Image (cartoon, rainbow, N blue to C red; front, side, top):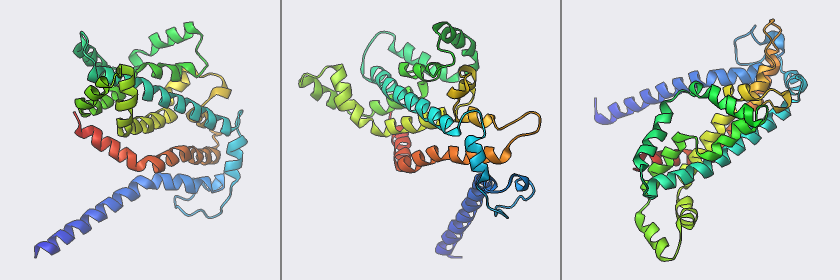
Length: 281
């Protein structure tokens, strides 16, 4: 067997394995979309992907079938996610600049303590945080979900940007200082524009993680008018067995659209941001 034939066989085998893996990974998503277009009585009766009868009743019932319109849940999720994105982008980039460029006492200790928080389970700080936010009167508002992110609490994104900034030539800083730039001007005019790949990565993951977050929003949001998409989808589940599966699957399909749009728009930048950030340091 020649080398060219062997290489061709390896490529074919690789494509077959990747295709099979993609089919297995996408099957639940395709089934959910298919089930959302079926009458509720046929959702679990037929495991196939082709609906026997197409209907949009599930979408109509899902959009208006809860106490609050599902559009309100979508809007709340987008508002909270955008606030978290803005907070993480600004605060984490400033903190990363301080760790990467400034020289101050106990910088190494502070950086190590920040990284140590990555290994701290969120449940450990849940009760103290709830007590603080409750005393501030923030419970049942978006503030406990969004406000902390304006204070660089996401150690992962700080570390991500620190590694990227360390790869930016220090000569650019020196040139800016010769022109009279202070640290704020240096950060905003030199470092921040060059952080684009890391910033895009931060934006995408902040949006997706916040949009899908169920636990934090369940703890702090009590009013149905403030519910986000994960909490809104829970409204279709009934412990008595009367769950509206068709409406829930239909709204789950709609809930994927914002994340799908974000991923499609920023797909190339996501790959670039992860690759370049991982190679710097």
